[in-house]
Image (cartoon, rainbow, N blue to C red; front, side, top):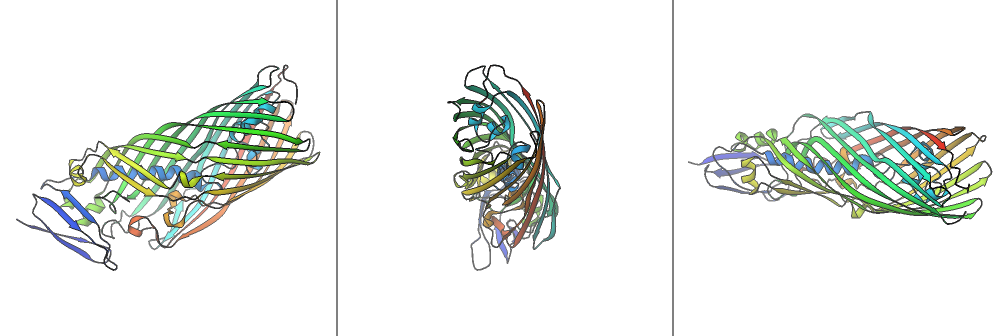
Length: 504
């Protein structure tokens, strides 16, 4: 007995027949304004689920978040504009100025070679974000104001009278939380599926635990290197549309994804004093690859109901093991530090970041799907999806200034600019790494062997518009994202006299 099924599309309807026992095939073709795709599945009369759908989507978005939160928050993608309050106040212009453990371990390990005392640094930075999202379905999508809190710790110790200094640090490259709330735009396979008002939340943690070594080759040159263990944890809670999976592309589901994993990276650097008032530095940081594992689950009830029978009777929840391979870009930084006056120092820096080889596309692998109906639909308990990112290589420009009011008190200011690496064609609020201009200010006070540094950074509000989105279903076409972030940082430094090391 034949069953008649009708599914509505964006500009029309599809009419096809299904007998409840055999394979179901459908071809939707692009004809003028009608959007179509191929669905082919082995369906049974008791079909109940679309569980694997959500797993796949969750994985994809998790990776996006990895790329975006850090990236949306800084003028140089996902990386911070300086680690520690001193570097923050200088706009991140620290590669030729790395004269403390945090600066050396985060910006240029060669700075370790010029340290004369063992020093411990403890630092905290807090971010407060403001964001708006608008599209045909939303006039005022909101971003939660607290973006994240970032702790840092570093310790450096000269090895007696030798020219070698060891450094240790735990520094989050990114510790951000993006929490948007807006209406899920009608879309999906039929062009009208929506999950209503939804939380679009993502959290990404990229934590580097590193050991470094600096060697002074006399009073004017220092070489250094560091190796870091990178821990990455990602979570995502949001609607998701499959992008490339042959059977499911265009299908919309709610996703809940979580993965974590480890990788390794390294950096090498050099500092050279060309003159008593002029110092230059350069650093290379390797590409980092992280294979993160976890699970993905979700619910596709709205899409299934919208498609009608037999899908509307399918079980909507699903679960998968998730695997995401994330690549963080290689980077080269170079700069100079010029002591223009006994109390005035200027720092200039340029960074090149190889985003195009790291964030061109985001592959997601889902395995061990537990929903038999979805497994039958895709022909396997595993599936892959690929999300287009197409980030572009960028150059970031930085400048920092420090003026010593006295031997114990210094004022600082800084600025950085880097064009957003995120193209409008793949932009969504969760990947809004669009901030470009950052201004900063700070103060440092030293008393005895203690020093306290305080900094403020403002990632100036940036707006990016999307005309035609490359993402499926066109839900982010004709949209606009506005983001701005305020940062406050404080660092405590404690120096321990090293009797064996001669001051350089």
